[in-house]
Image 1 (cartoon, one colour):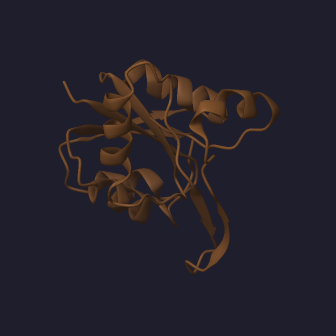
Image 2 (image 1 turned 90 degrees about the vertical axis):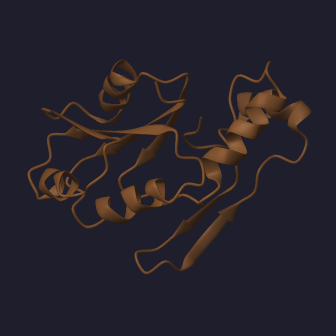
Image 3 (image 1 turned 120 degrees about the vertical axis):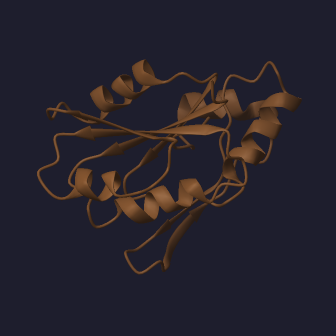
Length: 153
């Protein structure tokens, strides 16, 4: 059983999906499964993913039900202790999973882990950076007033 299930939500993502999966495959932590949850794509997404040779990839296709249903379907298919969500147009730093697992192991009472994010355009140019909350002791209180993280382990 893998330690991490990476749930990749897709919908008509043939322009991005290969690069997204490549960023998952490039992780320095490799004990993971890659669950591609397709939400009724009508483009070439499924064919492109099917051509990627990686035994960790599982493709699950459904009729369109929206992003929340796709995430829930991915959770149902997951077999790992930890779950990481990534959308079809996102990219990860190569150490993302390794770093977040280290934090979870060092802080066993933590319920979630998050990191800073950078938004980029289709050419990879930085649009905006969102730093992590500096004082983790106050993260829960800050989360009650503002969502400062995206999807994580």
